[in-house]
Figure 1 (cartoon, helix red, strand yellow):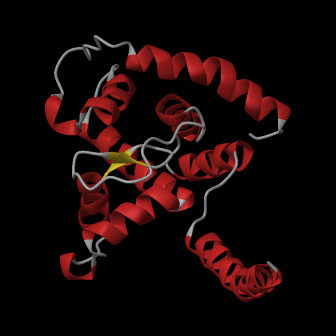
Figure 2 (cartoon, one colour):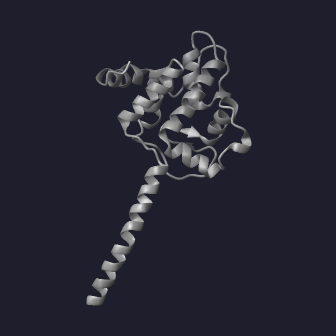
Figure 3 (cartoon, one colour):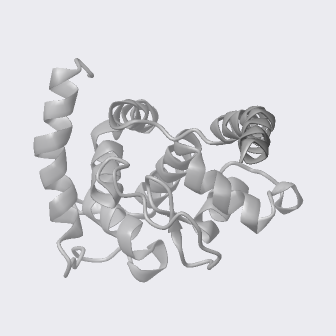
Amino acid sequence: MLFNKIFIALLFITLLPIMASARERLAEESTILPYGKLMSVAYQEGKKIGCPETIQGLLLRETNGGRSRGPAKAARNDQCYGVMQIKLDTAKFVLVKIWGLSKSDLLPDDQLRRKIRDDDVFNIKIATSYFKYLLSRFSGPARWDKAVLSYNIGSYRLQDNGNAYDPNGYVKSVRTLINTDVQRFNSVHNIN
């Protein structure tokens, strides 16, 4: 009995520093932010493209401001990741076509998935660049609606003609979030 207690104590003393080191490495690799910080980052990134409240509204609509991020692990290309629900193919498109990174410099798929899932700032930057691209694809009075809807359903599904047909109410939902939660958050936190 005494031997078991000594063994457990030695095991605990030996494993404690190892466990702490692993936690520190995980904290360094992941930049998962709390709600208020996410909203601030979304505002700052959105401000760069002239749509700060839109990016905040998309953040709220996609993951309730980071509160419901989706699955922690997945390996499908059609899976969405992180606070802005970015697909792997969308991240690659932004990195190569918009940011100018060469395909050979891209992270391997599993590492890029982890990056867009676990690095909130990176995820918001990808989403913001993609939304700016979507805005550039459309014209006319329904431009913003079409860009928001394309963010949800994919840019390849929506053409630049007529009004955006939104059977799921995504655009209305984002607009409502902007007019309620986003404006309230920005007012309370003096963001403008």
